[in-house]
Structures are given as structure tokens and as C-alpha cells.
Image (cartoon, rainbow, N blue to C red):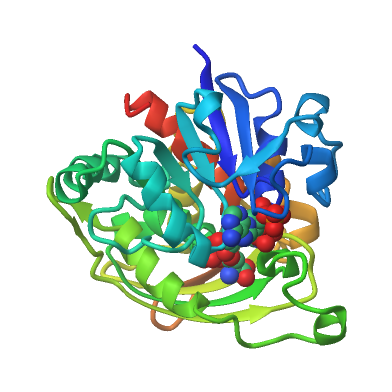
Length: 347
Ligand SMILES: NC(=O)C1=CN([C@@H]2O[C@H](COP(=O)(O)OP(=O)(O)OC[C@H]3O[C@@H](n4cnc5c(N)ncnc54)[C@H](OP(=O)(O)O)[C@@H]3O)[C@@H](O)[C@H]2O)C=CC1
Ligand SMILES: N[C@@H](CC(=O)OP(=O)(O)O)C(=O)O
């Protein structure tokens, strides 16, 4: 079975990752690439400042970039759209595609917390996809909108999902985030070399709210947010890719570090083409200095989560986790949601 897909915002940092991940995908066939009016009409090679570490696939390089509107992609006969637009643009243009009947798997942050929009990680809360029925009733769309979470949130939430069996009550997290998360021009070299910046606009609130929605319970009509308190402190550091996070957790139970490690290691992955066989790789006491961004961000092709440093604290436990922010944290997360949409019959 082949599904024709398009990418909205295909020339950007995340759009380029989509193109890399879609090359040789078993199901998805890239049929449309859109960008801003400045890029429309150019070939993809002319329009994109290609920065990914593999060449532009030959067939994509010669595709014409079209404008980001339903009219722009009308001839492409697309079944599914991936969206990697700036969130201000996405909030304006995504509704037009939804009204026109397109199914959109979006990476942009607008509408992630909307009560009728599924925010999903296929290995964690695939059942939340059923919110699409509520969304269609409320908005009158023929299409459907599903979002993936923020890159720092998706790094931590699989580990929390694995540990929730011990009665998760409180989470404190400090992030060390790579510069690619801010986009190519997001942080200047003068700002970040020999430095760390203890502020990333809006990031802490995203981690604190999106994680509770992802871990929440779907009642059939709504998602009840998970009851845990989540507090985040977000920092930019001079790594290129891979967000590292220090997590402090408190539980109703008193699990041992060994039990925590085993719960993360054995947490089930999903049976989708881009899911890793083992979702969370866990380092033991013998390697206390892992995970590290440079050594561990490509675990499972950048689609996995890596944890380590699990230790008891006076009130619970602490550990470190890491994921590739533009693969599992962005394009790869949307791609997986697209695979879930196909599997569940929404495409
Ligand atoms: N960078 C990252 O690691 C992560 C980014 N994200 C989110 O993903 C989204 C994309 O980020 P990123 O790829 O870094 O952004 P970029 O700025 O690199 O790319 C933006 C894309 O949107 C297009 N675009 C910009 N303005 C318009 C417009 N008015 N109409 C139509 N298309 C437009 C651009 O086209 P053109 O080339 O023609 O300007 C380009 O294709 C953002 O919402 C971001 O917050 C999420 C997680 C991680
Ligand atoms: N803010 C993230 C990247 C990002 O764009 O997140 P979001 O998808 O929530 O907009 C970072 O700087 O690393």
C-alpha cells in the first residue's frame, strides 16, 4: 500500500528531516513540497538551503516547491500532510487544509493543548487519536489534525510513562538543549559559544502542560490531564543535536533503582515502521556518564530514547534522559503519528 504525502514548510530545518526520513519509506510517497511565497515556483534544490548530513534525494531535488495552500497542492493527489511551519503561520493555514478534508500530522506548537486535538506519541497514548471524532463533530472538518509534542517534552515523557506504574506524583526536570532546537538562525554563535543560556521562551510551560496531557486518560470524550506536578527549567547549551535532561521524580511507591531501570528497559514500543524495537535504552551503574548527546543521539536512528544515571534520592529517584531533538523530537515524531493515522484507518 502506498500513501501519497506532502510536507508543509518542506524547506526548513524540520522539513529537511522529513525529506530525509521519507526517503525509502515503506509506505509514504512524497508528492508535494510547500514553503513560503519566496520559494514557490523554484525547484526544491534552489529553494532549500540543505543542511542535513545526507544528500537531497534526486527525485526531491527537482520537485517544484508550491505555495502553502490547498490550491497549491490540488494537483498532487495527497492523502496525508506533514506540517513543519512556524507556529504563527501554521495557526493561520492549517485550518484551511482541514476544512478542505486533509489529514494533517503537525509538528508546530499551535493547538497542542486544544481539548479536541490529539497530542500523541504512538508508543505512549495511541488511544488519544480517537479525539479526532470529537474534533470533527466540534469543528465540522472533514480532515483531521494530530499534533506531536515539543522536543524536550517527548524526550522525557516515554520515561515517565514507563515509571507511572509506581504512582508518579511529582516531576522536576532541568534540560540542556541543543542549538538546532532553535532553528538554523535561532541562536547566534556569539551568544552560545563558551556559554549556557538559562531561558528558552515558552519551553518550560510546554513541558509542564504537554506532559500531563500525553500521560492523561482518554475518557471517550476528553483527555483528563495526569495528576502529577511537573516543573521544568530549560537551558540552551552549545551542543548541535540531542536534548539531555536531568529528571527528579517522586512516587506513591518506593521502587528501587533496579526496578526503575527494568521498567524503562521493558517498556513496550509500537509496531509501526519507524518505531524502534526497544523504545528506551537504559545504561546501568557501570556507565554513570551516559547518555551523552554526541554518543547517544543516534540510538535507533535518532528515534529512540536513552536513559541512565538512575539513583535513589531522599524523596524518590533521579535519572538522565536524552533524545535527538530534530528526529524523535520533531520530524520523526510527526512521521510516526502519520504511520499511526494510517494504521488506525484515518488515512
Ligand atoms: N528546529 C527544531 O529542532 C524544531 C522545530 N520545531 C518546530 O517546527 C516548526 C518548523 O521549525 P523549523 O523547521 O526549525 O523552521 P524553519 O524556519 O527552518 O522553516 C520554516 C518553514 O516554513 C516555511 N514558511 C515560513 N513562513 C511561511 C509562510 N508565511 N507561508 C508558508 N510557508 C512558510 C519556510 O519556507 P521558506 O524556506 O520559503 O522560508 C520553511 O519551509 C516550528 O513550528 C518549530 O517551532 C519543533 C521541534 C524542533
Ligand atoms: N523550543 C524547542 C524547539 C521547538 O521549536 O519547540 P516547539 O515544537 O515546541 O515549537 C527548542 O528550542 O529546542
